[in-house]
Amino acid sequence: MIEGNKSAQKIIDIINTLYQREHEIPTESTREEILEYRQKYAPLILKELKGVLLDIKPALSVFLLGINRQRNYLD
Image 1 (cartoon, rainbow, N blue to C red):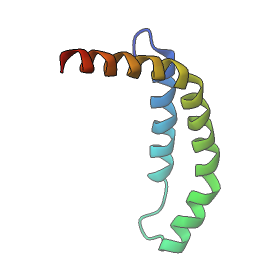
Image 2 (cartoon, rainbow, N blue to C red):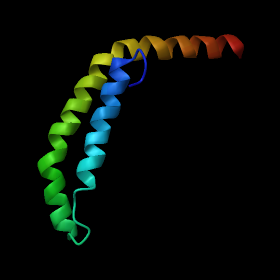
Image 3 (tube, rainbow, N blue to C red):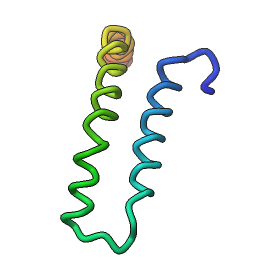
Image 4 (cartoon, helix red, strand yellow):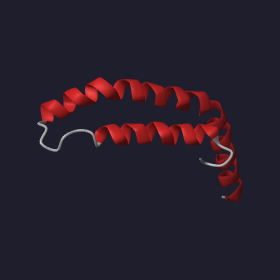
């Protein structure tokens, strides 16, 4: 786990789930079969990822604003 950052760990776990599902696709699958398979599992995983990202958006915005101010100060 990323020490002290539960949101970051959650994002990594979700992306790992997506990655694992991609590797379940048989190598002999056609493009159409791959697309069909992805359309079954990906929306739920991506919806969960979007939820986590939206939850941290305010904190991330404050963080990025601080970086931007520091950069402007140094210029």
